[in-house]
Amino acid sequence: MLNENIKTIRKSKGLSQQELAVRLNIVRQTVSKWEQGLSVPDSDMLIFLSEALETPVSTLLGETVIETEADTLKVISEKLEVINLQLAQRKNTRRKMIHWLLISLCTIIVIVFAILLKIKSPYLGWNYGDPETAVLGVVFHAFEWLFVRAAPIIFIGAVIGIFLVRKIVKK
Image (cartoon, rainbow, N blue to C red; front, top):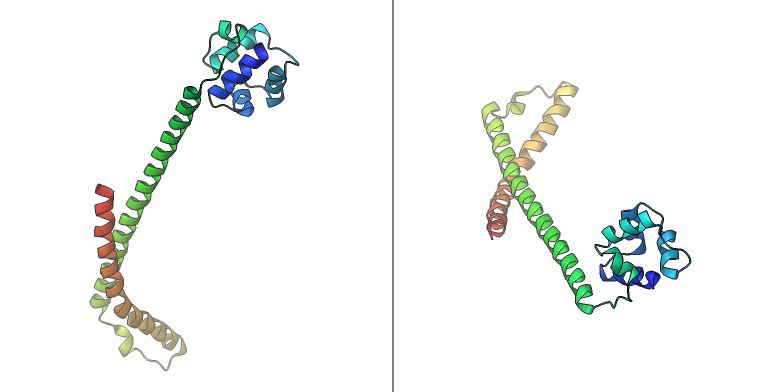
């Protein structure tokens, strides 16, 4: 009777043998032996077991407990609700992170454009006869050429992304 009650109550609470064992700080095999009727918990462990299962000791020792479908459905729905909340939080966090990354990208583009305007493209006046200056000048020129052509497109895409993500985050 005790073994059947332990098993039925454990299942109605949605716990595996391993989860119950962790709550009781014992090995899973001990729970298995109790449920098979091969051993019984001592009096102290019976009290810990009743607390872990949120069930009175008298119920554990009493008549056979009938597993109700409502308990099982309630446990499943509670677990699903928790999972849904966690997924919603994760999704919202990702959207906020994307929002701030796009804002950072726009800021970096504006700063680089400001720097390029401030230095007025000095690579045109460099002496390309010097090998080090020539390599540095070509690299700088290639960066500036690509940046000036690609940055406006990236900037516009980032601004649009900021507004799209912002609308979704506020909902």
